[in-house]
Image 1 (tube, rainbow, N blue to C red):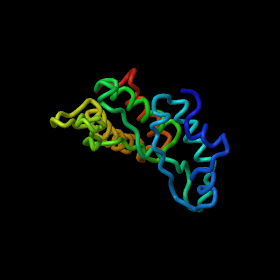
Image 2 (cartoon, one colour):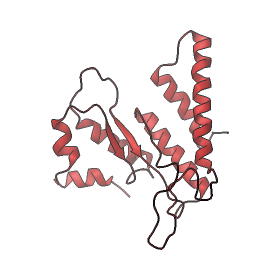
Image 3 (cartoon, rainbow, N blue to C red):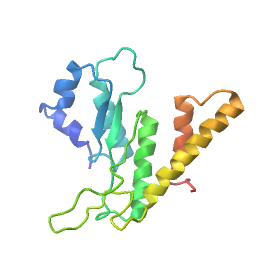
Length: 179
């Protein structure tokens, strides 16, 4: 795909929220719907960095302030295992970059084509079947609670943000994850 659509749009000098509004605000966080970059971790990180660079500093808030507010892969184009693999890739890219949140779109599908066909942005399909990405999230939350508790018991403190992110990426990495 090349350059993310948001960066391409802005490099052409077109006005947009990112380059016209964000630099003049004092918002706490910015949500990025990552559909134009979710397929490529490098492009996703570049888009997050581009948006972050437009934010003026915010007293009292440290760390990254851009988060992935939407990502997902429709079942009409991606089988469940591919959706899971691609989703873990997005989560890992967001964690590596430093996103404070990475939010999946969505638990149940709300997009139906005019012909009545489900687009399939879901963790639980229209028949009530939990998809692999559902299990990924369930397993991750279980692992995260256990990891934090174990680290606290072992070291007397909860892991730092950086320590947690590194361990989370290792847990979620599609090449090594074992649920």
